[in-house]
Image (cartoon, rainbow, N blue to C red):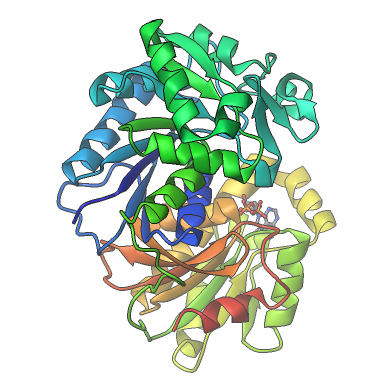
Length: 424
Ligand code: ADP
């Protein structure tokens, strides 16, 4: 198997977003959790997104992890590697975008690396090297107050210059608008000036397509899901990848199905109420969960009795005033972590009881469940709702499994039934 595209994402949710974008463009894509083991068996795919948590760790660690991911991808034949960063360029003068880019560039041998966080469909555009978040420059957006990476400069040429050892140039929109040849010409000029990486402007999807067409001729690029979209479209347009429509996540898995809800968002509360009409629903007592009593054992016994007959839902979710009261009694983190741990226990217990189709509502809740199940990766399938695809576990201890992982506000009113319908 030869990978057309290998991606290294610096956080999990960014990785999911990219994997979903690539799948929508017709690339058969696997998202892995961390750098996979050398013996991980992959299905026939076009792209891999390795999810790291390297955005806000020490630069040297981010470099080591990213280089390990790159080595793994190249060993699987990846022709192009995208280092996926946040579309708001989250970083500090200490890194980690510059140091990781420098290390990957040294491995790739590319003269000039193309860099852009532009993703117009989410309001991220770059003009004259300045990143806009909607209508305002980055340094006037809420990112100026980010707790970990406050962004005080919208000029990415300057931002990246402070982080990188190489000289940083600009490919402006005028060159991008003239098409791939003009961009290549500008890059050749920059290379002669000793520039090693260039911020490239993009305001519309067509700009991303031009960038993708040029970038697939390189070995490395840096950017957000927007450049992923450009690369994917270029791979399909060049015939290097045959676009799959409605990526098939393989055979039906069958067997018992269950849903877990730890999100307390309004959307999830509504979806739980709708699920009550079509499946048995158990509401955990959050106070008992935090007290460490046998609430999870009781829930597992309840589920085990029922899963032979059809799907069930177990929810910790409460209304905002109940959540606030619980947090006031126990502290927000302590309450959240205790419930996440209980949800991970439940995911593990349900799978031990035979569940092979699992729907989880809540971002943190999903992370806790997936970590506990030790699933190395997922083949990304059809979207149940915008941004929520069906996932088929790859290399899981338990063998074949289908999952849906939804963050709070996603999905329509019948999300749980919609998900199970696409997870045979
Ligand atoms: P979302 O995607 O909606 O943000 P998350 O799973 O990311 O959902 O976050 C929900 C958080 O609330 C988790 O830490 C979860 O453990 C916690 N939680 C779940 N149920 C309750 C509850 N009844 N009271 C307080 N916190 C809860």
